[in-house]
Length: 576
Image 1 (cartoon, one colour):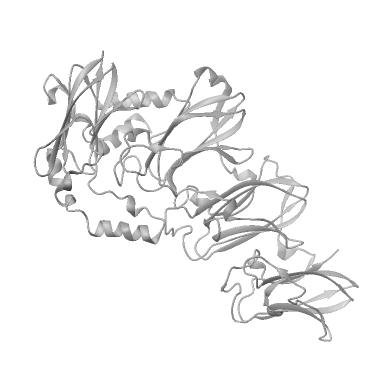
Image 2 (tube, rainbow, N blue to C red; image 1 turned 180 degrees about the vertical axis):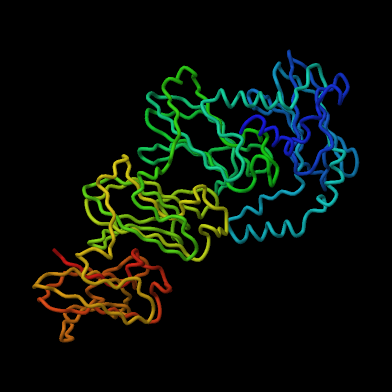
């Protein structure tokens, strides 16, 4: 964001920035912010040429019972971004039924400072919920607000903060230029970020370095809504993450969190990410902002500037189109997508999957099958996933797997809620990739080819994706005696099959049948059964049949589905 653009944003957000000037106050007044508007941030700056003692006076809202909110006035050191004074300090006195006055004297060293005043009468944190109970509590808060809120707006006309002492005021332009210099001198900075941003930058490190990270975001104990992280691009492991457990209060709403510390990186290739959701961000806060709103996002410096020669920055494309083998993404509610690929030799692949669920169960999931054996070679597992940003149920798996040469089929499915275009909670950071993406890790796609199961000459007959009350059949022919491989998925328990397959010859005689005893557990509920059999057949014509009852099928599962839910049915293929 250019300085001019940031100043345009300041005209909306920083409505008090232009109020601090020698013409607007007495000679001893460095800053006075008044005409405070609810749910707006007002800021002005001043500079001290030497250590000075200052007098600070502020008037704010006196809430019922004498309680006060820590979202009124504060002062930042403009260089270090440290808070040097807050309205909690000093002596407090009652001005009226709804006003409280704070007076204080503080000594500050030479430097530049920013003075803020912020008023947020109604906290909104309860509306950011991942459970029904939290939503109900939030609605209750909004439906029956504290009586303080009814006259807060009227009282705000008398709010102000005033700083007196020997120094000089700073214009809004000077204040913004100072912040911009800090960002430009940093190793990198994604700040301040507005809504819906997903930023990334590559860091190539050829010697151990120490990074000084200053990151501010929005989160609670269960989920991160605006956050940052650093990823080892070789292992796909996160080496640092801005999360609730490893951060502290950033001031304002309790969901504002800050990390300010040193992180060590060994030699390697890394990617730094910073993402925001659609609410509570720079320029449009839905509750009290942090103490340093202009650095919402992340700013990184080197602890030792001499280490700059060991770090190379570059643009980073997380999943380059040229590397993508298969993309089943942008899935909507009640959606299913599938696709195939062939590997001509053993290949390392990156699997990037987004879905909905928790450690125990996934509502939106994906998996990869060996097309020849129907065995699951990879599946999205909740306990191996990590938080994908947004609601805590947004889950991510970003891993590297090795697959041998062969044919593969991938599937991705969603349930009836929380998917692309219709999120019922905060979406993940990388929302456009909801589903499954498979890519090569080294940029070499020479070992990869498309695979279409419908054109595979090895498949003799296929009945899959079967629904309720099905009576399906398909004929196939063998030109000579040979061996076939039959893979079937069905439903059975207590020694009886309810959804099952069988093969008849041209005289109607059963030459193979799926039985409970000859099957094994197929994942999910125990009644999901799987059979993988090799059958010797004579030359001739055959018919494969599949029958299902009135429940538990691709038309609707009444219990946990099998691993390969869209393989519900039967596939007959040449064994050789």
